[in-house]
Length: 457
Image (tube, rainbow, N blue to C red; front, top):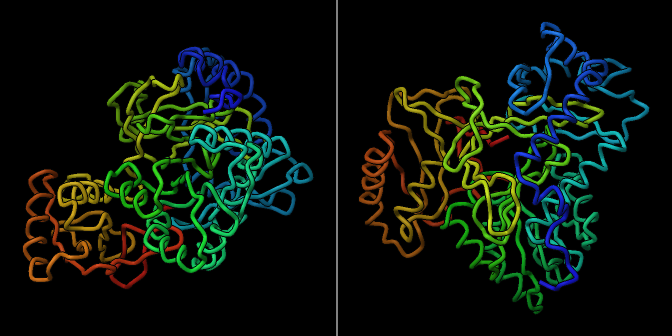
């Protein structure tokens, strides 16, 4: 890296000992809570029964406050009015709200969030920090492949790239063949896409190059929106198909800030990059007890956005389950490093055993590498089905070159391996190459028998 290019977006906070970061955050949260309760009817009600002498001297003191859930936010939004179209959690007058964002709406009714001018500044700074950790620099030409400006990954992501000073090439929304051509013509050096779309692009990249006759300038790829990039087979497929080695996983949460986590040069888990504006906790999803940020810990991430004006979030349960990879790093950043292992919404129960579809995919892809593609589809009998008493039906896709007469044996081998390693019975259907759907956005791991897919939200 050139010496005149800073190593960090926010050197002071990114390298400050994490205990000191948390102490500083606790002071800001303490100051913000009274104002949040005044501005938000939802939090005024949620916190109504709390003792008046609660003191947030450290982040562990947040345990005295109730969690905020998506259902509570949805109920607050359902009480919208002409003066407060964002509902009971609208914390700023409509005249001060300059932008609205929407959730993807894939796991329920669409939720809307507002941003004041200050909120927009916070979003742009945090997301720029995230992209910077992932390696984007001012001299990059970035292909932004999220198609809808209003979703959390639309305009806020673009603002983050512009805040860094990179050249934004917002190609999302164009047909895929045009995206591939224009990336060559604009000499794009970086791209941002969902992990699923990254796989799709990797399969078509060479053909686009032959059509344009232009050499690829692509050097950096950022993928997120769904778990998967920590799977070596998926990472290798994208890297090989796009002829790049700089491949970074990124993650956020539209309800809080859509870009907050990113891999650094060490390629070993995603750092938290929003510490200037957001505090994080790790909890046991079953009990709600706080779990220390320590290597090997597993839990659900909880967020507190302590300076969010338009739509506050205090102890918001993300439903994202994470494995803590480490709490220090050779890059010098001090924030925890994680891998996302699944979401509460996706979790299935087989005869009392909890299982994430991502865990099934990762086991099958790693154990049967070279014989199967790193994709999978789990079949449910209804959209609401969570429990399975019979073997879980799933489709896997055979790798090109695997003889068809080996499909049945491969299916039996997968069933035996899953039962041995995960104590879960599955019924495997092996499809030929290209048999699983590809998407320009997210590839759902779940589908229902009536043909309506249930994508991650």
